[in-house]
Length: 323
Ligand SMILES: [Cu+2]
Image (cartoon, rainbow, N blue to C red; front, top):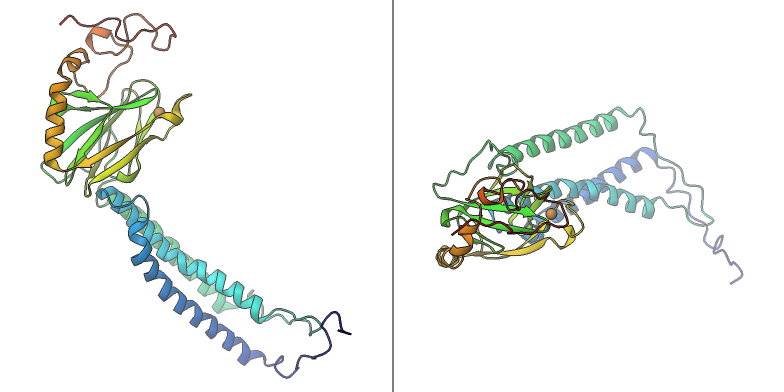
């Protein structure tokens, strides 16, 4: 009560302070032990408990690959994070200055300490080089660069049956054409399970990006360009599709959802849809890998003759082929 600062009532003992070399070693080994134990507990806890739930999930081979890559990076990053946090917490607790106590004395300088410097450079170099190697390997293997993307993929699926699905980006929606089923076009994206899919992504107007989040598939949609992205479905369920490239005023509304169903359900859906849309399919331009929006409406384009596709007066379907 008479001592509002709380100082002076219990003078800190001075006998523990000047035990220099033994004390340093003691702290170092204790820090190391805490770090090893927490890392050895934290890494498996994360990898086996949280790992399987990390986005984008395991719906496809590419999603599983993305999840694995993230988990490996996290397992490497966690001990680094723990090292920083443990050292900070340890320093705050062990080396804080108590009110009224002696001025804290700094330890030996890290500068010029050969062992510390060599250890620091070696550890960071090994981590960075490993990450560069791992990242490069994962990009190229096992499914080609980024899952076999590009107009001329360096990798193609080993599966004999690959279902081609064309994704057509346009302001402001995605439509899908199924060339193996008469080339019908629909806004529904339905895929069979346990099947290799070749997405052929293109655009009718400006640049878009086909991003099927839970499938782990993201491919740019450029006009006059057939961008291929492979994946293999592994799980039933629904997934969301978003446009991931700013493409105009309703870009934010350019999303829908898709379904992975059993191969039997897919077959039934595709054949029924092919039949149901047969009349519409006849009015569409014949299936092609890209479409020219400026082409003649009767033989390939979606836009009517002699009308600027961006003109406010355009009328869809003004010219239709005679049936
Ligand atoms: Cu878009």
